[in-house]
Length: 163
Image (tube, rainbow, N blue to C red):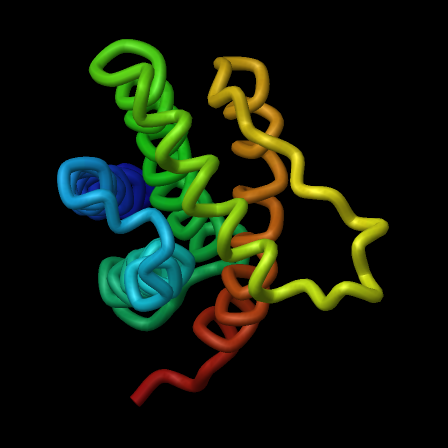
């Protein structure tokens, strides 16, 4: 059963990785760095894919599944998606098109200027260099923050009575 859960989670993680690559290539090609709909989708779909992995884990266990198993299913998906996100960002901004860094930073700077009032100017905009170290620093908090919904849904899915 554990192998089935891990395999299903890995497959869903790969599907999430393909979606991640497609979204980031779309953003890059169309210069949609400030599109809030895409930004929201980028934050929500990994969580959704992780929850689907948890549900599939429960089905693989025929309704009997431990908290550890459903959290592991979620974690595998999230890990693959966020690793792919860091990798595609590195490739886009450092290999394919280094000049895109300026475009992205300019777009983010303009959003920052619009959203911060003149009273809150103490928070200056810091440009991103999109270096490997910077992307890795963003990888771990992203995974940890996405784990919170996974832990909550893990409790619900592992403890829900079987129908």
